[in-house]
Image 1: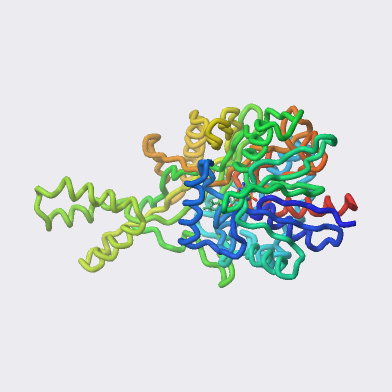
Image 2: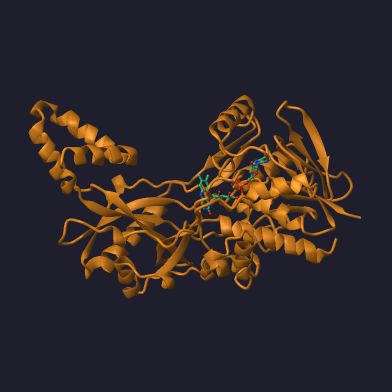
Length: 492
Ligand SMILES: Cc1cc2nc3c(=O)[nH]c(=O)nc-3n(C[C@H](O)[C@H](O)[C@H](O)COP(=O)(O)OP(=O)(O)OC[C@H]3O[C@@H](n4cnc5c(N)ncnc54)[C@H](O)[C@@H]3O)c2cc1C
């Protein structure tokens, strides 16, 4: 008899798992999502989504998981693999064998017809001057692939629904899961549809794939509501990590005014674009961090000359206001574009200077106090990011390294002051349901099964005990593939 598997969340983890499992004969697959599978991301949907959440008793702190996360028919930016050393760290923390199973990355690329990404390596194209400087300083290059079309996971799921391989329950928000009164198994999930009607869905196996904020919320609500009797795990929701980034300075030519385009991001062929990152290694007492540097073209850092020219044209009394206006304009790329346009019309475009912004994507240190918390009174999810200065310390370290790296070149790295550094979240949340060798240290085991519950699995970005500095999607997809292989081996 077929086993009924209920996957909650049809994003990268859950959606891809469903696609992979659909190839196995012994599973009946039920996929639940708060989204409508037929809708792609659009403004109307977004408004509907916002209204749905505003009217609901859940505060929507879930910035991801819609459109780009769940409905990934959208162009989905950047794909990158975890470094070998990062996979090793995960293996050490959780008893997995991800490093050995790196081939799964290529299986995913094959499966999604992204085969061409495999061939591509930094060594396959002409090195830019910046590349050469980093190589000379023994800095490792990290490959980032930028897709020029989406992976169309949703379209694949729609096709499988059409031919009845997957059953989909859309527009249904999972509230909590419930344990059987006799066995130790989860027996049902309770969902609320768009008319606020509640229903219970039963299955043999359950997989939560709602992302690193919603999955622990479902677990915590289930525990606090008394639906998971005798189950506790204090690690749920803790160790929230992201992949924060900041512009930490810029690089200019020491002697000439202009930096040429060729030093920047290149279009390699008509299928993909490639971006080189550079890994700056920071050794701490207990571990090493790999911060990633990406260099992007930026305009008019030296706009003083242009300002002066314009100042001669306009009335002195307007100076202050004008200065302010120019500064505001410079902050937004759209206005930059208009600014360039106006300057070229005024015949001043030869005064424009170029520089390169240096983005630092941080390998985040563990912070016990960064977590998501379930507020049972208000039924909300609150997100806490510990704002201690550890990130700034790492940024200072990277800045010092970059000064050294560029010292004997034609370029100059100018670090930003602390007060001008804005650290941003990358929406790469992870860690809140981390894999571990025991329930004392984390929530799920190396096969993504929740410790202490025999039929509950987690398949999303919450499971990472450590993430390094990579964009997560490709790794989440390969973990979903690994989980489907695991189910196959269990031979249900
Ligand atoms: C703007 C943006 C840009 C990004 N760009 C990149 C990038 O370029 N490269 C990259 O690697 N990563 C990128 N990410 C991160 C990436 O999207 C996430 O890490 C990834 O989607 C996480 O996968 P997941 O399976 O954990 O969750 P998701 O893909 O977010 O899927 C979660 C699914 O669960 C559903 N869901 C949530 N709550 C419930 C509930 N209670 N009941 C039922 N269903 C529910 C959601 O609708 C969604 O379909 C980006 C994220 C954002 C927001």
